[in-house]
Image (cartoon, rainbow, N blue to C red; front, side, top):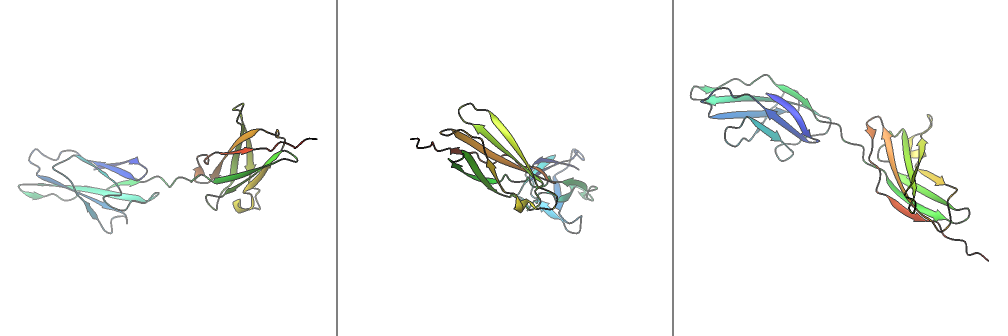
Length: 193
């Protein structure tokens, strides 16, 4: 049997046809290195099967073993040597950002929620909505601080009356998240005398 990951929580098992007279195959999966096995239902006499959450509990980052046996008129074969497959680790979710525009001086105060406890840096992207150009602002967590210490930034030097779009991504040992949902913030105009 061969096993490959086909989606974050899906495993495709495939095997060679054992003989022309096979009446059934039995596919099993183990989440505990072969200590126990769960049978996966098969329709007909297929040569492959995709296993999903509908079949059994699958966990991101976990390793699974799969094996198959064949049945014909003479009986059921021993199970194949197990194939091992590891699902990808769960993706780091994006931070959730909020922001407020301030008039004097013209700036934006951005805050976000850390998506995990082991964040090493954030990338805050600020774009001028009218021009559509984005200016990334890299925020790196200093060595003696944790990600919970730096979940905000002031963005100075902005124009009154302008609307800006902000989004943030986070980086951890597991990788970099997608950008957050963008938020739009307008800098109020001075009331001028």
